[in-house]
Length: 63
Image (cartoon, rainbow, N blue to C red; front, side, top):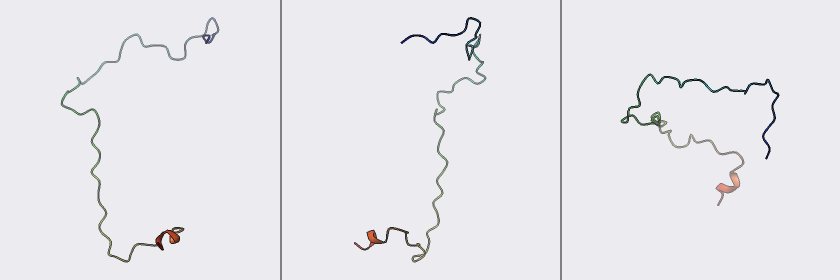
């Protein structure tokens, strides 16, 4: 595969920065890298009989 040819005076799309950005806070090895999930709120139990029938699934319920 040949390299894409550019015009002689064309600059690269994303020039590399001269220096790396500063890290304001050092990495804490005790902090998990993945954020914790928000607590799941379970819905309150509905009284029986309030469940609406599923549309288009009537034949599957007759078994």
